Structure formats: structure tokens, C-alpha cells
Image (tube, rainbow, N blue to C red):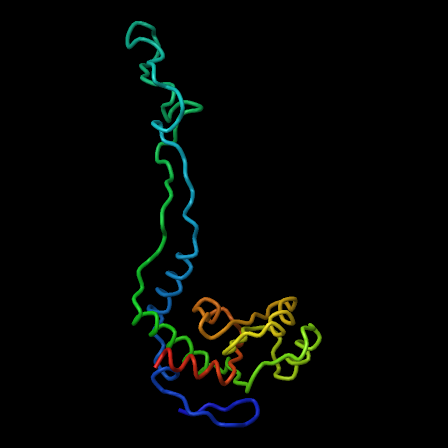
Length: 200
């Protein structure tokens, strides 16, 4: 299939990577797995065995008129342990390479079908100045979205970091969550070729 750049040039790309039928279930699974992998999972609480103290039976079993008790660190008591205490855990979900590649193909294909992709020759900023980046964005007609480049330069990063609702990443660091949530995706020709190689 052929894609047109903002300058009117035509680029031939693989249909396997950019013309795949959308698979909502697959994309949902990969996006969920990506978000789950970002969770810290470091929450920890103490059970009755972890709380300090409580080794001695507070009073004898019978004859006091009070309910029987074996430890002052029971979850029923104030200052006791937690009944179902949280433990450090990993929220990671297994997603194999074929599934991830398929989901990315679906996402890029859907972005192209819904006219949310702009292809530019490059995204170079001569100096690390925000106003230069703003001028470049207005030139290509982007107010908010994601810019994907083949190689991220320091000037481009410094120029764009203060602009709200605009992010810039390298093609190799592109993730499904950023793509799905972006209003528009700007791809440089170099980034497009890198993505095609990775997904074809």
C-alpha cells in the first residue's frame, strides 16, 4: 500500500504492517498487560505473625468471664495484624512477541484508517527553543499528539518538553498505550521504515 507525506511524496509500505483488520480483544489484552507491567506491586502489610509482641496468652482460658484470647495481636484487636495482609507481588502478564506485534499492527492500521497519522520527512529543530518547535508544529498542523522519530535529537527533546499535550519518542520506544491515547501521530519517514521492519 502507498502512503502520502505532508510534502506530497508517496511511500510504499507493507500491507501486513499497516493494513491489518482491527482486533479489539488483542489490542485490549496488550494494552492492559502494558499498563499492568508498570505497576510497582510493592504494597506490604503485617499479618498477626509479623506484628511485634503477642507471644503470651493475655489471660487464662476459663473463669475470667471474658472471651477467650490467645494473643493480643489477633486481627480482631486494635494494634493486631491484618487478616488478609497485602504482600509484594508482580502484576506482569505474559504477552508473547507474536501477540504484541499483531496488536501494534492493528493499532497502526486503525490510526491510518481514521486519518490520525501524518507523515513528515523529518522533525528537526535548529535550536533548543520552544518557539521553534511551536512554529514547526503549526507548520504540520499538530496541536496535540505524539511525534515518532527515527532518532531523537537533544534540540527536538528540549524544544518540545514544555509544550503541553505533545510528546516525542523514538520509533523503538513506541508503546501501544501512547499510540492508542494520541489524537494524532506524526511519523517521520525514517521512523516509518523502522516500524515497518519491526512489524512486517
